[in-house]
Amino acid sequence: MKNNIITQIQKSNAVKCINAKVIMAAVLFTFTSCESNLDQINENPNDQASVNPKVLLTYVSQDAFQVNGDNMYASRMMIGTDGENTYQYMKWNNASFEVYNKGLLNTVKMMQEAEKINNKNYIAIGKFYRAYYFFNLSLKVGSIPYTEAIKGESGITQPKYDNQETVMAGILSELKEAVSLINSNDKIEGDIIYNGDPLKWKKLINAFRLKILMTLSRKSTAGTYNIATEFASIAGNEALMTSITDNGELKFADAADSRYTMFNNSGYGSSLYMADYFINMFKDRKDPRLFTFAAQTTGAKEAGKPVTDFTGYNGGNPTSSYSDNAALITAKNISKINDRFYKDPTNEPSSVLSYSEQEFILAEAAARGWISGSAKVHYDNAIRASFSFYQTYVKNPNQYFAGFNVDQYLTTPLVTYDNTAPLQDQLKKIITQKYMTMFHQSQWTSYYDYLRTGFPDFPLKTGVPAPFRFRYPQSEYNYNSFNLKSALDAQYGGNDNINSKPWWLQ
Image 1 (cartoon, helix red, strand yellow):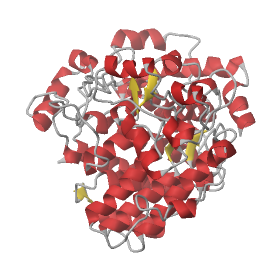
Image 2 (cartoon, one colour):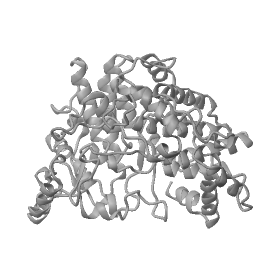
Image 3 (cartoon, rainbow, N blue to C red):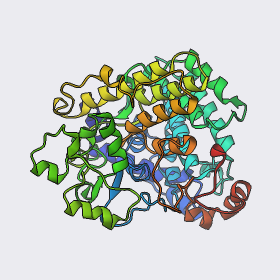
Image 4 (cartoon, rainbow, N blue to C red):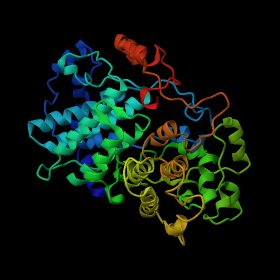
């Protein structure tokens, strides 16, 4: 797989040049472009009208699957000690709509190029990426341009906003169409996720449909879709992931532009430490995955404690001032992030949706009564898959997992699952363990799970609630203000506030 990444992303300067042109040519289709810019680009004799969709697939996949570290602060997994981090202290502000000008634009271009050569698999994968980008963006802010988005070539430079229900129903339909298009005949090249395997793409798309529906667990319907009924239909009739080999993940290579997202990140090496809330979950359960996430405290190292001694790990309080947490450094009593996250150029793959996450989703569905079967079976499968992932991808896993038995772990009091427990108790078990699998994985999923279920019970500073959303970007106020104002009036009474509750949480 490593060689495939290198050849697909790095094989020549020509590919880089094409990628650059695609990004520039993509401005032709953006809803924020101005007429004068369009004229200049149309007159560019070096602009390439057609690009092989395999090049675009490589580019979009690499963009979509990168690690997002901001959620690690918001989800109480890590803390900063050299200044106030807005995510750690729940004070964030504006979102970005850059995805329209980058990921979505190139996705649409890939689909257009695929239509020219009648390759349905690229179109299907394009629908997945469209759904992925629109889903994540809508969760950030609420209503977004959807039905009129990415249509600058049709003259729509100020698209209307669609409400969140319309967006969610729309992407569910796009994903259903994607599943119907995937076939074993149309070749998929440039695929750094599944190396051209259409069945694995079908499994990921179906799992993503389940993820969207579970994210909407507070709603009974989305457009014409009945949430629980649609979930049961997919879970009972469609191909789904069966092991970690089906994970929707990007493997990294030790080559320029292909290394782990946080490799050589100076902040990771100097000022980022573990949050006590996250660390204590593993210490309380004697869970050796902790050793793969965190480094021993300086005090523990100097005392010669084994790396598997849980007492050698400690975190800082994510609600305390950064200066108070910095004092723990002086006291040699706080754990940094394991240095593999910034020293290992390949590290672990970055997943947007794993087999483990799918099994937690199915466990929750069973607990809610959406599907038949045992929630415990799916829950246990999910935990086993998580351990399998780390034992597979962490270098020298025996130093962390020697003597560990996952079957025994599943019987310990804080871990063992009871199908007969009250729903809230079952949800707490599921979401807590799901959260424990998501250190630098699955984007903002752990935070959104918290917003919709209340689990895990994140510590918050008095008087500072957890935000429900981001504000809209300033660029929309500048260039699409009429449509933005209409969307704000319809959703939030005109107030663009991070504590305004969007449709999916109502």
